[in-house]
Length: 323
Image 1 (tube, rainbow, N blue to C red):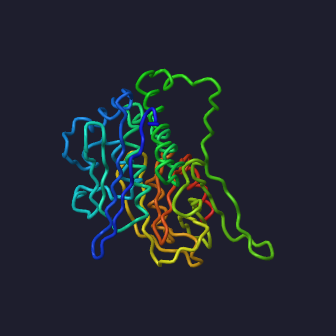
Image 2: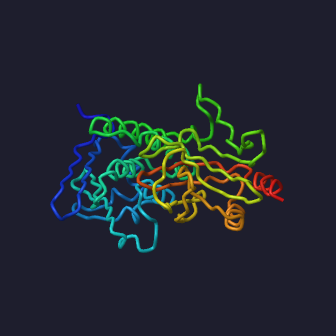
Image 3: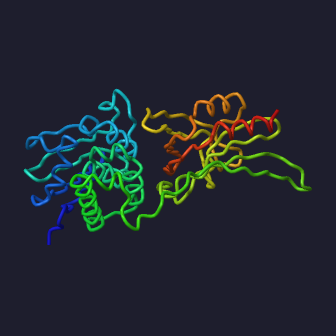
């Protein structure tokens, strides 16, 4: 029986010798779901003619587009169509949309499904409260298969209906809604060598509980440290990082994505900025109480979201310890 809001028709993959893998995800929009159709109109997808195709980058509102492409592991840049990863949404029939990609990275497929789910569930209210769709989608990153995707889209339909039919939930908490979690700030610890000798002062920031995710079950943490009168800032992954330098992609709130190549720690469990000048200069650019979105690419993909909280005050304490 057709799901009341949406159902997944198929996920087709083909591997041709000497050619990239082509992934095609098709989703049917049931004609009896006006709320979901309205959501599609809001992201400018329902006006496509049969056979037309458009890049996802040009089809969605900026707040949704940037997040979808960020999650789908696509660089955001002015030359997006020339990056080699071609994403587009096509209308196959009156009530069927398709998202296509040509890629050699099979690990991209579930993230592509997430990008489409973002488009289907997008509404203007989502732009004003990004943490809700973000956390919801990050939690389902590991879902796979037609049945799981179908169930996911059904839940997305419920969310779209609530968003579009009744704006009250956005301004008043529903009954039995748990209170928001307090911000997760920096906590300090001292590293002590054998014999009880003080070695370093470390400030650690844990990710948002619902947002730490990736292809590896690893929880990355941000750390700033004063050791031997030197300050460092790094991402501690608590897992082996193999390359000497690792690609780290960051974004502050809804700002632009920036990608760096940071040096790996000697013990191979983190990447960062290891000189005082580099670390302090970078940390002073991070604003208090902002959201930081991080993706770390080694042989695995690790990503998380952080609330920077009182980062400037925490940096001052680290600097004072290194005077």
